[in-house]
Length: 175
Image 1 (cartoon, rainbow, N blue to C red):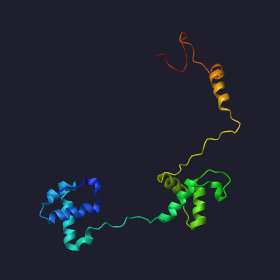
Image 2 (image 1 turned 90 degrees about the horizontal axis):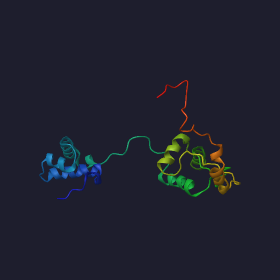
Image 3 (image 1 turned 180 degrees about the horizontal axis):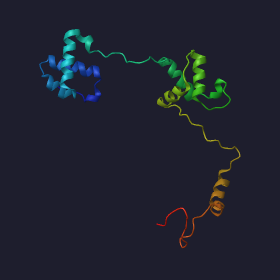
Image 4 (image 1 turned 120 degrees about the vertical axis):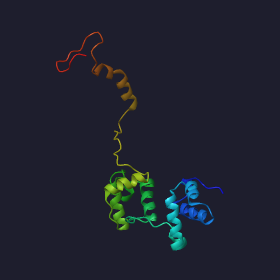
């Protein structure tokens, strides 16, 4: 029998396979070794199967508070941020911020979400991070800036003392 690597199996699949192996006559020690789990877990799963049947091996729903937005609503919010301008929703600038997203969610879905949580939520979904884009003047001439950096900046910038002269400081000990 070929068994998939441990990471390829869900926890429920791992429990069911362990019970199947023990019901097929395999020793719990061998089933534990094959699946990469403890022998104690195999014994526990087999006992749960004997008491509650197949339902005892089923995965339980996740704990914690359920999400405020449904999957469809979350996709819609991410679509706004990804594909549309913030100006389309009446904001003055094109920049998406978490407070703006929170305001839109409140307006469209009637759900109140904290903007600090939304920063993390948007980052986890790979959409935006809380950064302000660099402002560039429209009149900026990149060629003129490069020329100034190459020609005038070396004359203006502070230079280190020449290698021949020793630098002296009253606050630092000589090395």
